[in-house]
Image (cartoon, rainbow, N blue to C red; front, side, top):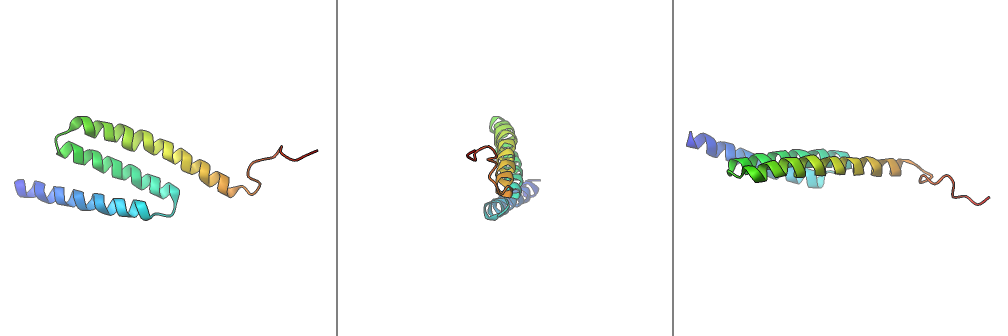
Length: 95
């Protein structure tokens, strides 16, 4: 049983490292945020494995949940501003 847990911990570590690299090198903001949320959820699993349930809950709620939702909203706004050619200023012209 101990060998199985060691293999699980090793796979979890490698997955976290790979996910971190892919998240940091992603060019699309929405994809990077989704990968960040997945990273936060896996990190919560790591905290649970380390027998720190308070940190696991905080990471899942704040790190993945709240921060992820805020970053998704920011990525959506940023992509919306890049798409509009007039920069959203309709009433700034002089009469």
